[in-house]
Length: 547
Ligand code: SGN
Ligand code: CA
Image (cartoon, rainbow, N blue to C red; front, top):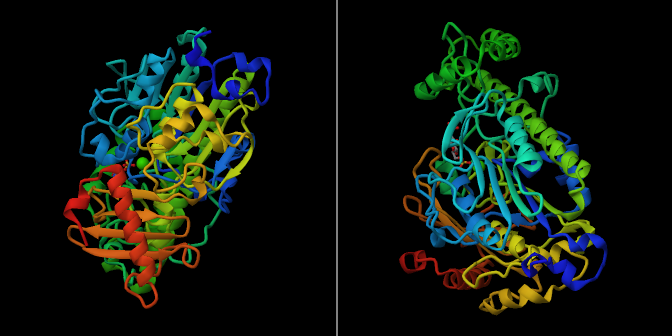
């Protein structure tokens, strides 16, 4: 056997079994915009995700998992490269990924792995480092989406999450070389806006009502950037575009004419006649009811205060129902992948990962979308299941981890050495019963500059930098540091403001403590650590924003 394929677990020999002689495969499932609040393994109070939970039972669920830049393209670039946005060049969704740079799929490929990427890619340039790729164009469509398969465009009939899974299972069954280890990306477009459910899930949750988060009516006191965003359910979520009230006589209007037009096109032109009929069977009665309740004056300013409040509550319920229906389909399809692996004797030699490209607001602060370094969008769900034969354990990990850590983790798990310029650190030790894995941890530790001790991922501080402004949701640029207890953020550009949170007392980021009595010493310490991280990661912003 090629020595590259010897998994580290096998080298440690802690749990010697025949399975160790098999190289470790990687199945990396990632959704777009899946909030940890809607996964039952993460304590969801609104839905059940039995299949994602099944994976959590087999592996490790990370309770302190974060992203480096809470937006799709940037997150994906961070994951592929193991580097922060300024280092990989893809700082916001208007960029084009430089596919000539080092990525972990390329390194795996060089080590003899077979690599495949299926689903949402969102990096503008075509994938590199994959033997097979079959990607959705741009954000991808929910119904009858267009894919680009190794350079060839083709439209497929059906629902995106199911098609993506079908393609992945087909690749596993028929297209790969069974003699080689593989790394398969299954990257769903769901549950991204506009949360279009699969036809078979349309009637779920119709009778459910959801409690508004306690801070739904946040007034953003002390937080200027939060005040200026445009991602509010009340003000920015469009009833036609987002909530599908595309009435045929076009009497329902919302505040955004462009979105309204897009919505009308999306809900009447994309589906075939059978899909459209099923869709209409569900939404037309809701549209009728909506008209009776709110008339055709949908702009909030046309409604009385009481009606506006009622409309907000109605919007929240619709948003939740559609979002959770989409999650139901994601979960079902995760189950299909787990079943396949089990039925085909692959469960015992495959590292399986479930994550999202970032977290998402389910009405907290009154919002949908992401971007902020506030908890709901800075965090992302992360479950990794390493088979027992490779030393894998089950349970939870409270290590402070970030999506730049995935690349070194996968490389180390595959027994491929981690290049020095990768900024993330391997979290493999968190997946195993053994506390240390000598081979590559040494290499990673060697490049640390003393900002934290590698053996103490729990105490680590994370760096964040978000850039996309003023696009779409007007979230000001910011960078910051997150320690296990505090977060310190620096907004810059139009809003220039520091924000400081004690997350132990204020996990919802409601009280900006910056400049408050008694915080001077703490602030000074955090600013120093933040500077150290900027130095360590070599973020050029440190030369521009110096206060
Ligand atoms: C689209 C969405 C936005 C969303 C961005 C980024 N608008 O532009 O609401 O913030 O994507 O999302 S939409 O009308 O096109 O749905 S990301 O996750 O892909 O980065
Ligand atoms: Ca996303």
